[in-house]
Image 1 (cartoon, rainbow, N blue to C red):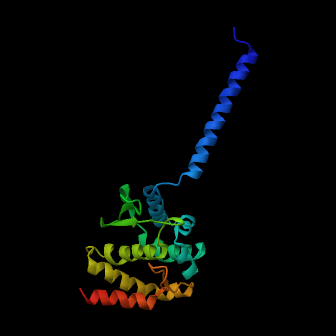
Image 2 (image 1 turned 135 degrees about the horizontal axis):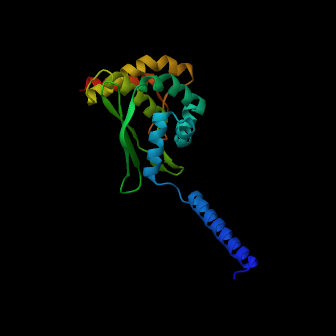
Image 3 (image 1 turned 60 degrees about the vertical axis):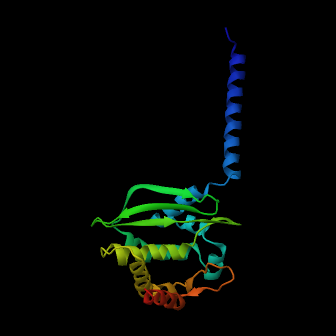
Length: 212
């Protein structure tokens, strides 16, 4: 017959073992960064749901610095310019995600469908940096909203021309509001370049559209 003291000793060892395992798993999660594909899924969900904390955390450092981008400004953009345009859209199918073979970029894509049955893809493509995987938050939020409003809801095909037209029309509609909340343009791709002002972006899009 097993003594109470022995049973207690076995129980204590089991509890100690479980505690060590839990601590090891927690340490592993803290020290091992998530995969690029996982970050891409997180970013894509944030674009769709308006997860401001996640979007701000994943924003490029130079985007925050050059645009003086804050969680409040991201929330203003999503609440005023993005959410109304995605209203009525629903997720269709499972989100797809992958990472490039060289480990430089992740990608996730979620299909959304509006009540008329027209659909669009919301994509997230985080790039690896010295600060971890990052995304261009403001550009993607606005381009998603403009594509929904000026392409999908009009039942137009997604082509290079309609994509450029959606950016032009969307910017002309939203520019005054963006300026009113202290956003003067998009962050550049190159760290050495200045902010791409709204007027500069508009001219660039118009030039590309004229060339088609």
